[in-house]
Image (cartoon, rainbow, N blue to C red; front, side, top):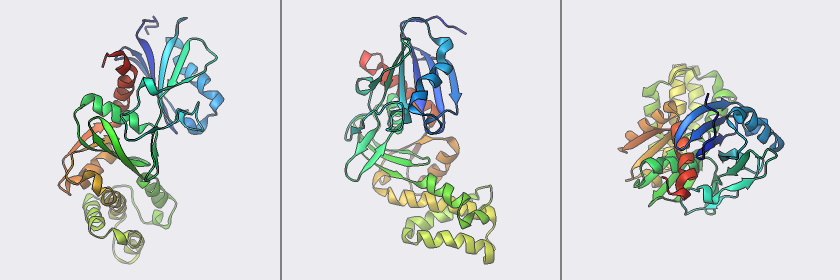
Length: 303
């Protein structure tokens, strides 16, 4: 392990609700990657600095190390609130970051702000850094960026600027329905892709039948011969299909980039491809690091 401190040594941090990811950097190169389950949801504001020090202390020297943080550490319940930037705007960089007072003089911590939209009211925190990472790789991208997840985001991009965005609670509602609703007795473990495709098509043509189609999963497994894996595929298709139908103004006639975990991104790509949309898929973890690198170096003219 190299513990020498160079002028361009710094630390990138993605602090989510459930997990914490840290990259010890030298310039744009990763020296060490550290993962922890000490996300915002499990710690208090006073615990942020001790948690971070517990992970990165071996890489610090007597000189000050800059730390750039994105994600929920900047929320009202986080380490320190980083006020939202208002769209239309480019993804925030280090110039927009909020400095955080620390007890340990070896740390110089800044937190990137999220983004907000007044009409319709919406917010994002963390996804803006993934958008910055994608733009660092494809600076001339024009179209829509979709970030599927617990709260899926659709962002319209023009000339490096987020012009508008919408959030869909698809992942959270899917988890509630599949794990705590009556449908938990009907769904299996494997997503039947034929059932998924059919459900997406149903939502594209008749989104108003969404809640009725949901109960149809329960009835189908009781009296209609619907298998549990087909029910799971259909539930996934109904959820993603409803979202895509609602986000039509973002993707219709547009290039679309998907940033997220491989499994869920593959389902979104399948649903969008069926609508004739060309889709580019990028890894969410890789992209957030690219975004942190871009945000850190942008003001220095290095990227």
